[in-house]
View (cartoon, rainbow, N blue to C red):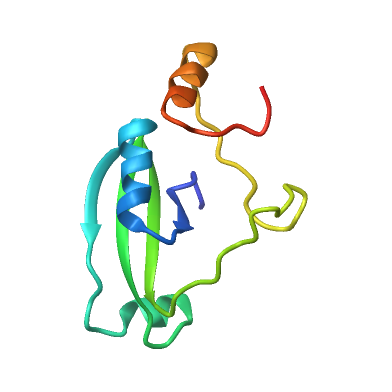
Length: 116
């Protein structure tokens, strides 16, 4: 029986920059970085023969976020004007004990918000 969400995965363009954001700005703990392997396992799992990726596992509050930077094939970027109503992931919810203080801290670190 399925019991809970184990992790969520996100494809990113720059693993190091993304790890720095989630770890240094949002407070996730970096568990490990997995460098591309020379076997076909990822390509088989993802349905992308020959795929190679750098992968980071981060944790926050007992939940894991998995970041993938595909080295081969490179992924296409989503258009920056993509509205939230388009099909696909639209947000990740994080719990805060002080939302106004966290918003101020994130703005000080140049994090952009869609609204106040």
